[in-house]
Image (cartoon, rainbow, N blue to C red; front, side, top):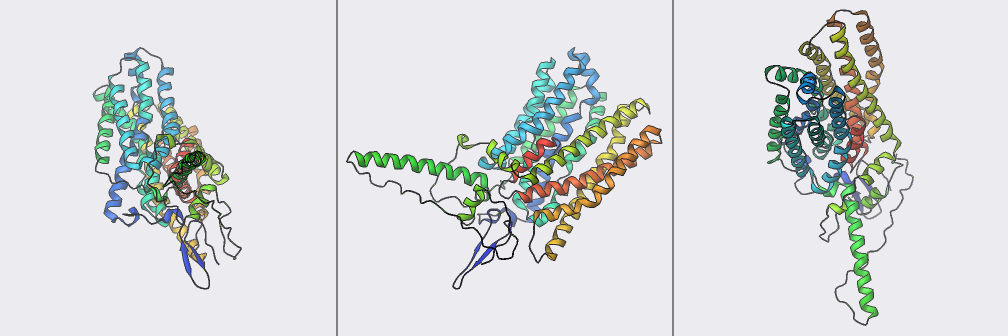
Length: 477
């Protein structure tokens, strides 16, 4: 008897029968999204990338108009900053946790439609706001429109692990948001006023909403550990209630026909040591999925409701694993670095180089372009390393193989950041700042693209919850 890694099929051999038991990620489903045409998949990637760009743009598109907002709404810079802080908090924390939980029950499409509809509403009301309180509240609703974490889960629905690194690079549009936002905001504010920035976001979000109407859902409940665990809990509860009713009927001398049979307890066999590496981490949900072969839903037709949605439990399953905590900390550092370098660069260019808002945005575009190229090249390099070590390992693959692609960028990133600081301190020509910004963006996102693909690969059956947890550390995801 031989057992492969949990992310692969497991072949169980006996003297008479050979049985292949697949992991839940490869459960048999109708209209398998991974077998869709390349064209359909690319359309899906383009759709979710465009929706995710809303997050990056919304964060700072109105930064050039802050002074105008303060003047027209008769408010302070602190309250305007509060609107941005709450937006980032909800976009990176509340939104991803809520939508990832709902997407495991409702499917991806309904959640995309709801989130983008809320974003459109928030943008329109923000554009019409007459006081800072309304603006802050509408920015919070805007934050609920964050769907980037759900986008990564959608890519996991339609691509195999060996393809995800490459496809994550096409999912790089949000990385341009922080750089394009100030430029667009400056142009719109100069041509119209600060409200034009929110009207632009409302129109863009509305287009994204319309693009999700013909969107074909990629979610398959047979491949979701979260859905299968909730379904088993509901079946167990219903079976218990029916057993109680049956017992009461029998005690009263009124036998009940057609009562549901009692579910037999299940035992999950532990694999014997066969010399093949197996995963040491099997949680309860994975054991239940393994016991049923692929985690398919039981035959009885049971519809889950919002009462079965528990956004906390899937997150706890993710957080109890040290590898997920480590990657989340890494994402948090990259997020902090991204915001700190763009903020300090803006201040430096304004104070030491006397640059205006539009010129500052153009310089910061170097960081955005570097980030996009880092995602494209880093994703492809990640897949190359993954396939290379998979071949060396005799066809066996582990998610950790992908992290080996981060070694070179991790060595080069610190010198690039130090060089940026030294150049700013010495007031060297702005071209040198552009070069170091480009390198910093390129190398940091090379690391991030690999770690994001790793998070998806290492959390089979709950990729949406895992990416949402990771996004809580890096709200620009």
